[in-house]
Every structure is written in structure tokens, then in C-alpha cells.
Image 1 (cartoon, one colour):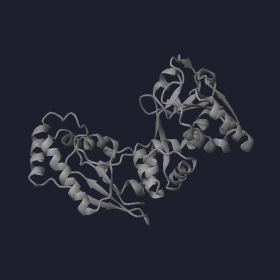
Image 2 (cartoon, rainbow, N blue to C red):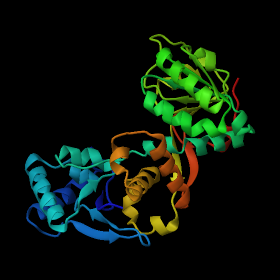
Image 3 (cartoon, rainbow, N blue to C red):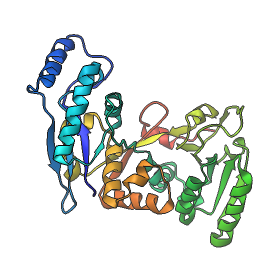
Length: 335
């Protein structure tokens, strides 16, 4: 892995906008300590996994509530001292959990933030197998449809990922011509039949729908009932259209104890495991810039998925419309 530093906050208030009642007195004391170089200091530790190069954990001297409620003078002092500390310790790129990123962005600090979305897309094949297993469908016989806008690079990467597992597929898109040409090449090379349509409603009978589109293909799309499970990698508009369908917006993963035990417990208050897994795996593979830049290619997504399995990570659950899906919800078939 390349040199980088994971940033976390100490145990404390986890909301940046509202401090709990009675918090303000200790808040001003700690800010005063920090400004006067008192007891509030940055803490740096090193984490190593077996023979892999290590990385730093930087624990900030203030919790998320305190960071979000600093005045302009305090923010300038914080930014200056943090920059000096990171330069002295050769911290390299700062990687910040999403839950902390807003507070540090407000401070004007440069950092990288992973979302877990690249991992979610890379594990598509594993997710499809899990859904098919729950629903009693043979994966290679599943009726799969994809909704796509202009993200053809992602569409083609996903198609190549699924080719060994499918016999046919439907693609719903407003950009029919260029995609139809590519689908013809895929049929000639792999023998997989791909139907292209501009109608979302025509795919409502599919077993599984993969949404890549950030907005509806047509301006006015009515809702309809479908038995399909929907892997949503696009916009939340799909939740209104696919009435009654099981919508999957993300996943929960479990990392081996040998990895999770090396980090302070406070880190997991701010960083989701899927987010952390994406960070570790992308740096281990040396593709962190591609992941941060959202460069979805078949090769890189396959590398992430293979490294996920190799590291002993597991999918433990799925995020639905509002919360984690229950097993029985995943198995449900709505008509």
C-alpha cells in the first residue's frame, strides 16, 4: 500500500452541528487549550498488516461537535497546526471518513474521501449470486435488466463482469444506437443475447434490475409494480418508479478481526466498514486514484472483488430504501 493517513476523531459528540446540552463549557475549555497549546494535541499511530506496508492513524484533538463549532480564528489556527504536524510527520495523503469530511472541508483542509460505492459496484456479481440464492433462482438463468443513461463505460464494464454468468439481458436506455452496436459485438463474440429498449416499463418482469441511471430515461415516468430486486447504483428516483420492489442502495461488509482490531474503536464511530474496506483494498492494489476518480473498468472492478475475497471479507447485509433489509425482505417476490 502507498503511504496515507486515516483521520479520525476522539470519542465524543458525533454531530457537527448540534452539541449536547452542557457541552459548551467543556467545548470552550478544550478550544482554549488547543489555541494555547495546552493538553489538546494531534496523536499519530502506525498500523501494519502482516508484510504489507503500513499507514498512519491521525486522531484529531477535537471531536466532531467541536470541529463544527469553531470560529474563524480557531479554524485558521487548527488548519495551520494540522498542516505543520502532517508535514513534520510525513503523513502523505489524508484520507477522511465521510462523517468527518464535512467538518474538515469547512476548515479548508485538503483530503481524500472514499464512499464505498466503488466496492459496492465491484461486488455486483457476489450480490447477484446472493440474491438469486435467497430467491431460489439459478444465477445463469436469471432474467437481468440494466437501466443506463450516458454512463456507457460503466455499462460495458458491468456487462463483461456478468458475461460468464448470463445467457441474455435487457438494457433500457435513451441512447439506443451506440449501445445496440456494442451489443451486436458481444453477441458475435460471446453468444450472449442483449435486447435494447427505451422503455423502463418493458423490463418490469425481470428477476433483477441494475439501475445505473441518475435520472429517469423519460421526463414523465409512471410507477408500476414489479417482482424484481433492484440493485441501485444510480439515483433514488427508481424508488418511486419501482413500486413494491426490493431496492438495494448499498451493502454492509465484515472485515477479518486481524484488520479491525488494529484500529481504535472510535474510528468505527465515523467510518463504515464498506468505506474502510474500499480504502484498504484500493491502496493495497495501488488503484486508489482510479477509485477516487470513479474510473470504472472491468479490470479494476474485478481486482477489487478478488482482493475482497482474498482478504477474508464478507458481505453481511444490504441497505434498502430506509434501513438494512431483513432476510425475508430479500426473499420476497412482489407481483
